[in-house]
Amino acid sequence: MTGARNRSGRGQEAGHSAESYANPRPPVALFGRERGPDRFMLALERVAARIEPVTARWRPGHPPPEPAGDLPVRVARVEHPAPDVASLTLVPVDPGAVLPRWQPGHHVDVVLSGGVVRPYSLSGDPADRSSYRIAVRRIRDGVGSGLVHGLTAGDTVGLRGPRNAFPFSRAERYLFVAGGIGVTPILPMVRAAHAAGRRFRFVYTGRDRGSMPFQDELPETAEGADVFVRPDDEYGIPDADELLTGLTPGTAVYVCGPAPLINALRERVPRGNPFFSERFAPPPVVDGRRFEVRLGRSGPVLTVPEDETALDVVRRVRPETAYSCRQGFCGTCRVGLLEGSPDHRDRPTGGSPRGREFALCVSRADEDRRLVLDL
Ligand code: FES
Image (cartoon, rainbow, N blue to C red; front, side, top):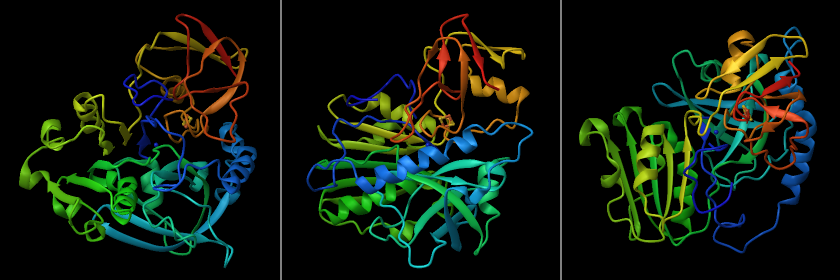
């Protein structure tokens, strides 16, 4: 996905779910020189690419992969910075080992019990290679968040990544907006901008102060740095115009939060401002046409309506079908494609080639066409 912005929603949007890849620049060492690919990360992703299909190809009736099949880490600490938020500090199982590098906006896929994989933003200090921190708000009936909240110090989980689905680019000025637990990817960005002396405004919204984690980690407001904690119960529900007050041309806008917040801002941010966002939920289907999928060469034929994904439909008859990001970048939902011409809408991240596979969560087919899936 290229271009300064993407308004179509197609094939975009992590953990919560990462939405936009509106990065007009190549990856940079933040506030430094432009840089080429990180060789260590490329090597790691190549290794991950060989491991990843274990989950992607898991089939009903087969035991799910062991959680520690990827990069095993140990839960060193569990804290609760808000009543329904678990903050986990993860350290290498191997004492003295260092964890892969990351930048603000990166997330890791956490391989939980039963092969459930969920992406969570890294919210700690990128300079600390001895530990990662993720924070997860418990969602009612949420499988992934329930499993994370069941973890205790000493437990081991597997990690994949880090991956970059919410790229933090160099800019002279920033507007950061976070809604609730959306603070997790934004917090390292705010710290980085603050440490680099960039001008920025950060508006942190949420239901009430008690529900908004990590307030104690926000940088002090200083010259050029404006931090505004804005609970709804004190200021009312925010609207886009208010949040964008004082936005100057060229200021990069970074948003993470619920879809309505992101959508409202996307509509109001002028075209001269790079816009980047990450959402909690999968994006709506855009330009969807009805098509069919057959599960195996002789299995049932399912119709995928215009406004649903193949993953939605397949999970009704195969509820154990694995998925994670639901946005087309992690590869967890990919299945073999036996026949048919797909409209690939996924965006495989480095080292994870698509091949003859089909990403159930976002990819489609032309109207009334049928795909035969290896399911
Ligand atoms: S669930 Fe991540 S690519 Fe489909």
